Amino acid sequence: MAENLKEKVEKALETVRPYLVADGGDVELVSINESGIVEVRLTGACVGCPMSQMTLRAGIERALMRDVPEIKRVEAVE
Image (cartoon, rainbow, N blue to C red; front, top):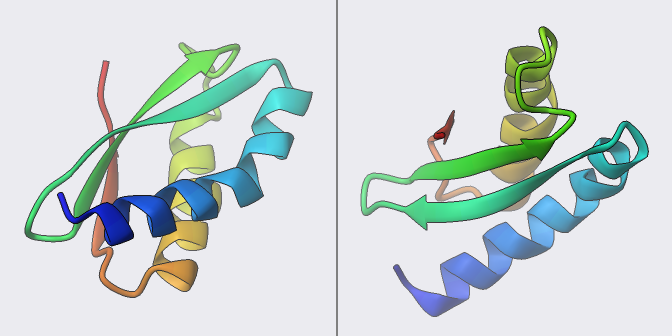
């Protein structure tokens, strides 16, 4: 993964991280593939939370796609 792209994704994740941490959760970057798909791991209270899919799409994915136009989709991995 291009280092510059990884830095941009990490910076975008920092914008949503405080909201996750406030609820006892967090997110970590796992990988970015050449198709623009980012894999993240939800941790803490986000694991098993019924709202985690909405958090992933409406929060994390939206922030990443807004800040990093190369990103096409965000997927959660275990």
